Image 1 (tube, rainbow, N blue to C red):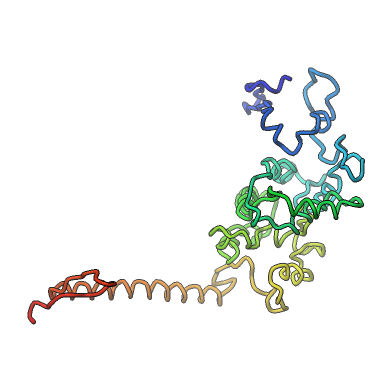
Image 2: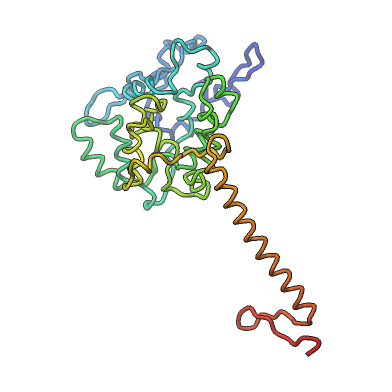
Length: 320
């Protein structure tokens, strides 16, 4: 109705601009296309409506009914998990902390349903994603059938996960407002330096991203590492690492996933890093230098470089 107009919006007293336009074609292709506006915006009782003063509650039950249960669908289970996580906004949080913590829309604004090649779909993980919400009798068998014929990826790529998490965790000023530890403050920098981060940067789809280690199949159960429910708690690390590394033992879990190359914090890694850099660059420049000296000497003697059945030096020295 009104929200179809492109320039519908307002400017508040602080000069901030709000756009209330809803693109009908975009909405028709979204995951909420079968849900009426007032299913989420429950405070609206009439049209035209009064100024909206209540936020959308994603735990509300929708009129959308899953075929196996015929009960109103709700994100309540996910909301309950999120409410106990490190990202949850708590009543005792100061205003700047509440503003810094992510809500549902921060992570779920962009559409997840994008075309992919069938070979890239992990059917078991896709099934686990469905069962986070759909646990009714009959769903498991039916969804096993569906996921093997799915041609759409229902989760972000590892690169997208890292990029999404980095929006907050790479913002030092924002993270300082939440009063996080120094380790958490450097999380993005140290991850990008790790073997996981480098593999992700090179385009790997099989490498562990942030969610792989910090959450279970429920995805929203991210806790501080001193919480016994955290996947990175010392008592749970073995199980978490074995998701990818089947031979994980007590020594393996001592390896720093977020390595800090600092002399004071980790002198062994620090000096090992210097040694390997010197070895790498020393070998490279030595090889280039030797090639340059050899080329100079041969050209000085009148030997011409020709490509004849492979690379070789051909010719006669001047003085021969």
